[in-house]
Length: 441
Image (cartoon, rainbow, N blue to C red):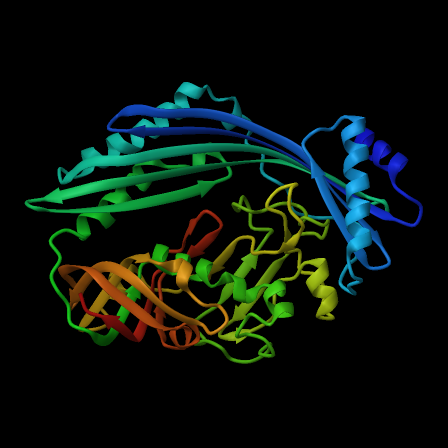
């Protein structure tokens, strides 16, 4: 990084500040189906993104080539881009680096494991699912990914930091069949250490979901209590997560604008974004601009506490940055983003939630999450699950819809489960909600 900065300094024009962001990512992917290895691939990408700043104008360019000539060209392109921009009061670079108490997670043991062991792990996902229930007739795909990354940043104010990290993901899609009926469901996990991925647990969850959807019966449209299974509620929060971001605030694209300090949910509901979470999927020492990661309570017992900010959005909003700047890669500019977003646990088991009402729909799968509207809060989603009566499963339900407004949903929360689980960087327990509109199948 020192050599890269020396070259950038040599070609930067007087009067320009600069920021150099370097990233290297190596990925290994394994995919199996029907107990055969279908795909094995490895890739590595490394590059530098350079931002230059002058008179509140920012220019940006990137390169995957780190030789002097390429770096000179990318500096020139960034300067040219800067000269074409309009001034923006939000444009600035971090001037002082504060110490971070958060460590990145680098799984040296996992990285050093032989590739054969990671292939065997992926195959074991399929074997476990099939052995747990005779109704599992096939696995459409089981997949595993290992990611090893390195991030470095330096700017003309003397801010400099770097860290390494690892992540691991596992996914399985299982086919259940009974008589003439069949159902497919999938399960996903993401961890920072290979040893934290449990193939038996992942398989058990996908078996539960796929077999519970067998032999569905029609259901009339009605307003009724719904238990959102932990994964379903986590995915719903992920779909609406842009409403909490500073970029949505400055663009006027969130229904939470001007609502800081107001009650927006039932007091049972607390939502946290924690970039310092121990071994969290998106835990790092610093955000993409050098602000230390923080634990930010977004909704505190029903009260909206504020937005998640990058330097840019914090400046425009006259707020402090929250450590939520992110970059998709060195090829992109920093924006505000979530880290480890989760709903805090309550005190009830899933079984207790399902027994609280005479009749309740357990939603295990949601479809069409990309159609949610964070500006209005409206949603209408395909859903599958199980109808329960008096705490006992009555029959499977497929092809229904659940619809409403996210603020109404939060305010109708009746009870929160104690089964919090993360699915990558988003987590939730199961949650019982009253008076949800369920469109019949």
